[in-house]
Length: 252
Ligand SMILES: [Zn+2]
Image 1 (cartoon, protein in one colour):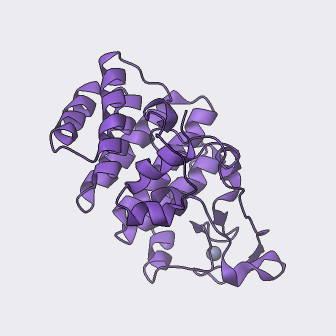
Image 2 (cartoon, rainbow, N blue to C red; image 1 turned 60 degrees about the vertical axis):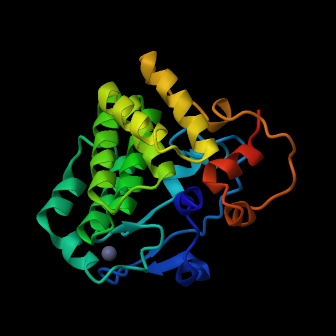
C-alpha cells in the first residue's frame, strides 16, 4: 500500500488541458498528466520502486511556480498548508541554492506535510529526497535526509513491522549501524510476519558486513512455491502484507 502511495496519480481537477489552480495561492500553471507504467523491476529494500517508475521522480510532484507549494496535485491543499508555505522555514528552503532543485521540491512537500501533522507522509517525501541525492551521487545529502526521515517516522504514530524495516534500511544506508541493528533485533524478536522476517534477516547480514549499498527486495525473498496471478488487494486481504505481495511479483 505504501508503494502505491508513493507513485503519484494525476489529480482529477488538473486533468483538463493540464492546467491546475494552486490550492494555496490560486495561481494557474500547466502540469501535463502523468501516468507511470507499472514497475517491472523489484523495489529496493526501502521500497524505492524499480524501473520504469524509478527514473520518473521529476514528475511525481507538481510545484506551483508562484508560491512553491509542492504536492502530487497542487490543486489539493490542507487548510494549514497556506500558512506553512508563507512561513520563514519554507521560504528559506526554496531559496537554498545548495540543495538540488528536484530534491528541494520533495523537501518542500515534506515540510508542508510535517507542518500539517502528517509526519509519516513527511518521512516518505524526505526519503524520496534522499533517493534524488543518491542519483546525483551526493552521499552527504542522502545521509542527512535519511536520518531526517527516520526522525519523522519515529516522531509519528507507532510504526508497523514493514515501516520499521524501512527505518532499519534508512539507518543502515546512513551508516548508523548500532541503531540499525538495535532496531532490527527488536523487530526480529516480535517476531514479525515471515516475509518481514526474511527482509530483516538480510538487513542484519548487511549491517554486520557494514554494507551501506542499495539492495532489492528480490535479494531478500526466496521464490514462492507457486506464482498465481494475485492483486495487491487480494494479497493484503490474505494478510500477506506488502512484502508478501512483492515476493509474488518479483520472485528471483
Ligand atoms: Zn501557489
